[in-house]
Amino acid sequence: MRPKKDERTQIAALLESGEYETADDMADAVLKTAWELLCQRQTHTIAIRVDGNPAGPTLLYGPYTDLGSAKRALKAVGSGGLAAVFKVLPSGVLDDRLTELNRKHEPKGLF
Image 1: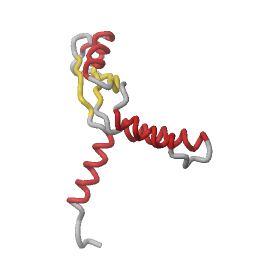
Image 2: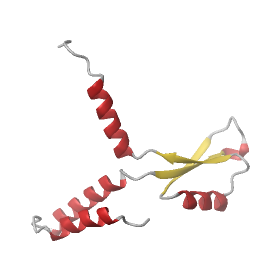
Image 3: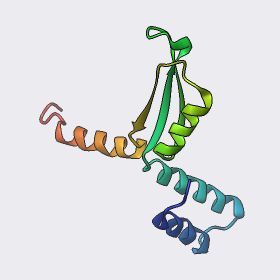
Image 4: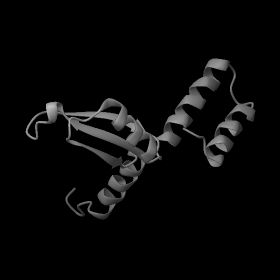
């Protein structure tokens, strides 16, 4: 995974802010911000059918930060013939979309 410029900028701002009294407070802020930033990224997951059985259970592996990494992982683990790579919607984007849908479809005048 390569940090994006805006991600580095946000983490650097936390480190340089001087607003944290302890190293633990700063570490908490950095980890929380890093997690929020990573939740905005699109990832990929590989899905493999156990023993190549179309009706069998599916194992999911990931996340992978790019399509190439997911394809390399799939090749490395082997698939028994039934496998796929999927793009995964970032959880932060999902949260934003759900909030917007709730706002648009909020019942009016019930309470």
